[in-house]
Amino acid sequence: MKPTILIVEDEPAIVDTIQYALETEGFETVCAGAGSPVPNLLSERRIDLIVLDIGLPDINGIELCKEIRKHSSVPVIFLTARSDEVDRVVGLEIGGDDYVTKPFSPRELTARIKAVLRRTCASAGSESPTAFAVMEAKRQICYFGEALTLSKHEYNLLKVLISRPGAVFSRDRLMDLAWEEPEASMDRTVDAHIKNIRAKLKAVRPDIDPILTHRGVGYSLKEDL
Ligand code: CA
Image 1 (tube, rainbow, N blue to C red):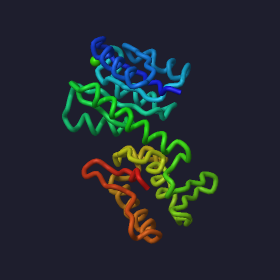
Image 2: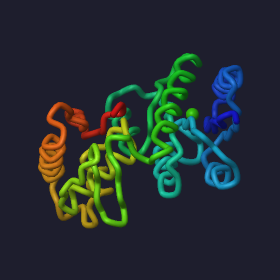
Image 3: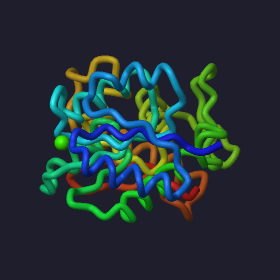
Image 4: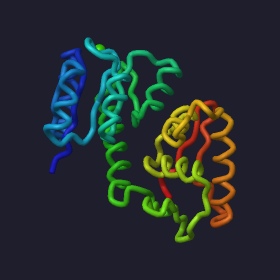
């Protein structure tokens, strides 16, 4: 079955270019010139990935991605005309999987789409990389077959990282996802918990550090475990 890519972009020339490139590569495409049709499109048909312009006429692409994330984990690649670092980080922080800066070549975008699809398909089978096994009911995580002894927040944090290998989570985002009362804690707390988790993982496998630190941004889980 051909993967279906939803292109959300208001500039017809860009839509045409992307659509042509993707169909040439064997993808199905669906197009929306604004953000408002997107929720319905997602509930009506199978969408494997969204190419999402940030500058849409009716809603900011970042806001739209936040809405999408409430119901769906469909991969999102942002198109942005602004190339400064803040925008890039923001794009990843709100649950996007990658971004491409305009002007971009269709070849570059196609390569990014394929990479994201490979990544998400690889983790779709088990919902987690093979090194980890999450047993939700017991609130337990096994690492290379060994059950880890984790505190409540350590478990929540690690589960978030395992849910999307390769995705960079900011400290704020980790707090939102792993704490029930995020405002009660400080940024540093995330670092402290990550440090503890790392020590526990290291006790099982001293040769691997599966958690990557992204300076000034946050953390991700290594993809190729
Ligand atoms: Ca636009």
